[in-house]
Amino acid sequence: MAESAGVYCPMPSEQDNVEQAKGNPALNSSTFIPPAPLMSPSIIIEFCDRCRWLHRATWVSTELFLTFPPPVLKAISIIPLNSEETGGRFRVWLNLEGSPPQLMWDRKIEGGFPELKGLKQRIRDYVQPGKSLGHSDKKSE
Amino acid sequence: MAESAGVYCPMPSEQDNVEQAKGNPALNSSTFIPPAPLMSPSIIIEFCDRCRWLHRATWVSTELFLTFPPPVLKAISIIPLNSEETGGRFRVWLNLEGSPPQLMWDRKIEGGFPELKGLKQRIRDYVQPGKSLGHSDKKSE
Amino acid sequence: MAESAGVYCPMPSEQDNVEQAKGNPALNSSTFIPPAPLMSPSIIIEFCDRCRWLHRATWVSTELFLTFPPPVLKAISIIPLNSEETGGRFRVWLNLEGSPPQLMWDRKIEGGFPELKGLKQRIRDYVQPGKSLGHSDKKSE
Amino acid sequence: MAESAGVYCPMPSEQDNVEQAKGNPALNSSTFIPPAPLMSPSIIIEFCDRCRWLHRATWVSTELFLTFPPPVLKAISIIPLNSEETGGRFRVWLNLEGSPPQLMWDRKIEGGFPELKGLKQRIRDYVQPGKSLGHSDKKSE
Image (cartoon, rainbow over all chains, first blue to last red):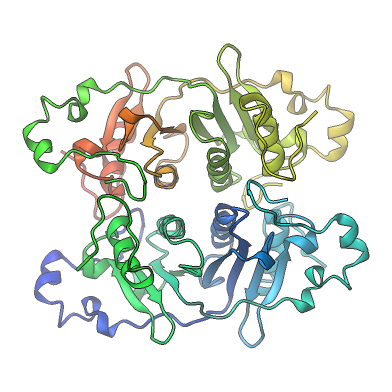
């Protein structure tokens, strides 16, 4: 049933749906396990929603998942903020097991938005140190 | 400095950047507080990455933020999965303080993907029960 | 029926659908007029698909529509390219009636990707010269 | 210089930029050829902007490009509409050389939005009749 996958990702038939819902764990939501609160490695993007940066944040998350598909990155969380004191914020955090989230980017410190190449290099150095990001990439020193 | 905002979201000048980094808490990352692990209310979207549903998940998150801007929804997390046993999964969870995440949508149970209207109605009934979603909306009973 | 609009955008009932398709011009596709080949003003984004810039192009188009909603911009076209000689291309064109499309951005000439603010200012100067893009904006001279 | 490509998509060096702009056709915009007004095959998505369907239209275009990368589809144009008489419109057109654009989807005729699988099957039957869209796909009859 998967849209364009080359792999087999099954979907219960409608009949299953009706007849076997109680017996089939795939259809019995009481057997479902909610995801863990904070996966590792994962990315958190905080941004000022007054500045209308939702689509920028979403785009960054799309690019990060394409470069670091699961299980390299296990989750990305998007956090829009709309209070006075978070005005102008655009921060990218990396969450790794065993330590508090580490700051990868802050718009005020860096004086602007992340060019993807630089952001990806910083994240790569933590989550996949050997990986080349393409021919123009150099391991950051 | 905000791109298209009608509000004032300041950005430190370049001079600040150089001269005052240590003194200016906006530029001193050791003063930054990482976001909490699990905000409330928030949404979690789990999906099968083999099925290539990243863009569907991202689109759903964009739509939910437009309908429930912060602080109604405080965060959305996207979790791609690529193991055998999560094949074909597309689940939307709502996280509310004081209880485990509640299932809002499961592709196998529902027999397909969420039409946005229905998904928004279910979420609305928890996070903003009085809100109308438009003239075709009815409060679910 | 509109998802979240404050305006009334009707949808024929199912009954209409079945009974009146022939008589109801809204449901008779032979009465539909295809869109014109090149609307004005409109934007064209050409990019190297080998470089995987689809999501960047799509994000830019989202931002341009949010800043210049119709009828300021009437259309945006996205053109992925995958030949040898278009390698590394990222160009933004503005189409205005009565002249050939004008170049707003070229990655090789500019030495990188458009920061949105600069690109919006250039487009604004043609399509909506009086418009302020926010407090940090200055009319380009 | 390409972000994540496995191919070589060159970017002129900064020195080129300064010294050779006039001589280097890659940097001389007077040698650039604007894209043709209507490419074939291409897709046109018209939608009611009052209904806030920009992100739905953008998502559909992303999915179509992933399934039909260039040169199968050469362009996708997005046309937001905001007049009274286009209220509630969501139409997908296919443009093929030698004939006027053909309607692939109309929200009012179909009674809702395209499920991607169905829309892709219709487009596939014109632009790439032999292509399988995955294991659940059947050539439409």
